[in-house]
Image (cartoon, rainbow, N blue to C red; front, side):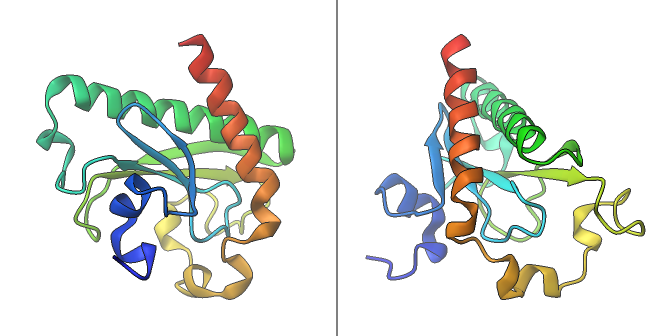
Length: 159
């Protein structure tokens, strides 16, 4: 058993032990990000820890993963638009440079972001944003988590 779910994000999600899971989707798990310097940041985790890249999936599962990414992106967009009038857009990314499992980042972007960062990739934010405790996921994000989950439920009921 893994003591820290962060060391096995997908396995802990499959076991129901990952506290960041918002919803189980067709090909993965919608999770709210560990850091929330851009409130609503979410990640889609593939549901098989052996899958490293999108091309590892058979075509039907690949399309299901991309559909899940689309739905999570739309859910984050709707929730953030409702909760923050300065919401601008959502950025979707599948990178794979650090973690050895398939995942997609869903980044909400806002008008209040610093002018030197608002038009660039999130990865240009200072490193302290990623580790500063004030941006850590916590109970203050419960409303956002519920809003994203509710939007996912609505989207999935129409698809």
